[in-house]
Image (cartoon, rainbow, N blue to C red):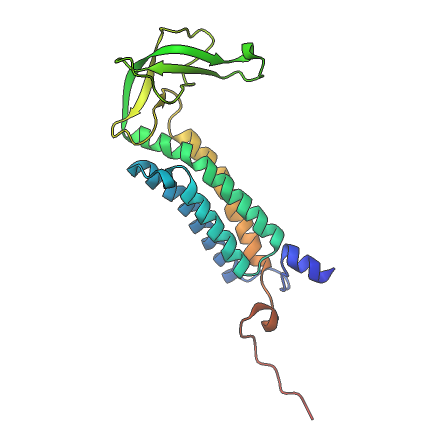
Length: 223
């Protein structure tokens, strides 16, 4: 049972509080990983790199963090939790990145509603309405707008839409700024860092044979 507990949750072979350097190592690893997951997504959205803007680069960073903990021989349950939290952060980051880019390079123009879908009338239980729109030249946009689209919206109505001046991110309706999605990412990132610290701290081993590191010299055996 001790061996099984060590594999699942980590050995945590220390007495009292964990070493400060160990907690610092976990904190640095978690912060670097969370920053990389969000940062590469923002860079991808800013420069129009679809592989990064869609969250794929963030997923690679999450996998790299899980591999680091695996090499560190952390508990497998904690590695799985870290991988899950990192993946969730990577999947949430694209929306925040788009909001940040639009906040910096916003250009508001009116569009014309061509159709309205969604809402409780569909029987799906969703209260969000989705508007298909076209620009002033009559060209339909590839995305549907939900900000500003409501129960009273009808085809032919005008909706303000925020465009990227460099057309590197999709447009969206005028609504919440970039602070709201970034604030949501803070919760995911903080939880990821906290679990990463716990995983690194609990990976501590006193036995040099188990950790693969040189340990303290032992006294020679007597005759």
